[in-house]
Length: 226
Length: 270
Image (cartoon, rainbow over all chains, first blue to last red; front, side):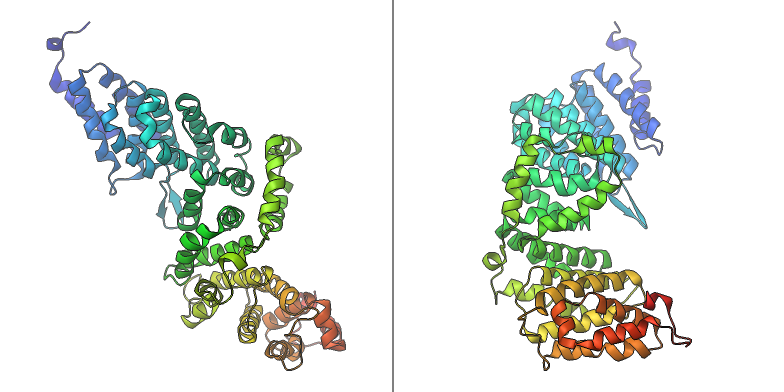
């Protein structure tokens, strides 16, 4: 077991800085490995030091940042949360970020980018569901449940629809307070959501019968998708 | 389009909310300067009108059937409705086949007028123009299709305006726009030019406008016009065909024969 005096903090700080920078890397594998590395190192730090690392993460989600930065940020959030390093006090701030990340889609001329961000955001919410107790998550259930439903039904990419559906399943199982969770899960599963037309026109009608989700579904379709 | 259709099927769950919170802002966005926004908005308005008119199920069925053709048997089996979903479907079909328009968009209401006048406003502001602006023509045709599918009561002057718009779109060289116009004209004829329709009279401005199609469909040098107008003859209702008597059949028969002119067009004969 290392003692505090055995650690060269200057070097450690340099390494953490490098990992935080690498979260913005253009390459997916680099971002992913950095997030995991950051998780492992932060786990071994004291609470104060760990919190200092966590404080750096909102920088990655600025409007001016690239899609790679948002993706890296989501992966880091998920890794830190999975290891129990995100304090519940910070949850509100990160739920707001994930609310945007779950529907992240940026126009780049003839195409849009952001499916990797949405996928990573689903992973982050999945880790939230596993890390926090239902009491802590309760104030954010509405935000997260409606967004997850929107992504699982109306995302363009099949991997994002499936990721959101799996996350919703995890939330229903672990938290238990997602409205009509079990009923929705039985209809909106891995297979039924695999086909976009089926998700949009068939499964969506089943979910639409629940007023908790209807308004945000309609608003998303009319003002984001159209 | 898929998003607009999803709006159509979901609108029946809370028609009042849809009209107040979705339809109102969407009608404004139909005149947006950004082409993709106004095109999406006009499709959205059209599909909401179809949905609230009680026609979303047939609309959805067509799209789902097209999508299912591309799937293998194994895939179809995996996606197949569960018992719960099948039960819900029956209920949904009942709910969605009701006409909510009289309730939430009553005759003479401001919102209904806003929806009906979208086409006029789009034309007035010349929103067909600009790079890629022609896709707005498809959107406008879809709105006419939606108004006719829902059988909204429209004045003679509005009907006249709609027919003029459709005829303009029949002339367009892009076959996709001609197809959209034909689809809209077909529903338009079923809704407003069928047995007992007041517009089916010799002095009606709609009929006078349609009469103008006969000569150019045979003699015009522009092949887009001959193609488009002949497509229009193909979707007329029985009542309309009987009203014009032999004139339609004679024109179409004459158009099937090559005239040994430079403007002869195989697509028009097809």
